[in-house]
Length: 250
Image 1 (spheres, rainbow, N blue to C red):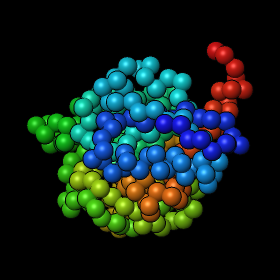
Image 2: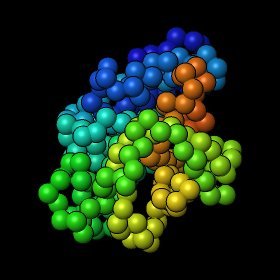
Image 3: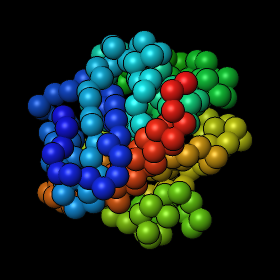
């Protein structure tokens, strides 16, 4: 999918990781959001869908200027999604994970950075030992809900959203539970929480742009005004494209 409004910035390549489906509302929003970014922000993103099974190849997201892991779990390949997250994290490629993408970003970090190799997602591995569950069913499902998120001052999330309080839309039934102190100790920052103190945003200090939200910013409004998180990802992708162009061939 390539937008057609003439940009003033370099065209950046965006990898959309997930199992594309007309039944997943966030997937159907993507073309609208790309058009809106081109029209309103004059940012053209050359976007390609990468199915989770194809993402098992570590080279699948090479050459892209940003990676967005979209909702739609359970993915056909958990391993593929985790491989894409790891590639973006280790190679300094701008990354966004929303809903299932948020959950799997935490799962990848737990396994590959924190050494919690048994960390599990209850939706993918319902028979996992309870002590290994990093992602498990929420006490109250957030499918179709809106809720307030408090954003930490001085965080990437706060600079992107422009506020320390925001109301966001959800469509999920799973969230993080155990081992969060271990993830914090290894450098992951939890910069947004709900009114009960439950984690809703994660980011990685020191990375050019690494942000994950349990809420779905792609569902904000009617798609004609991209959420600030999506606009920030687009700008980060363009910056990455410009750096790659300046660096020239490897």
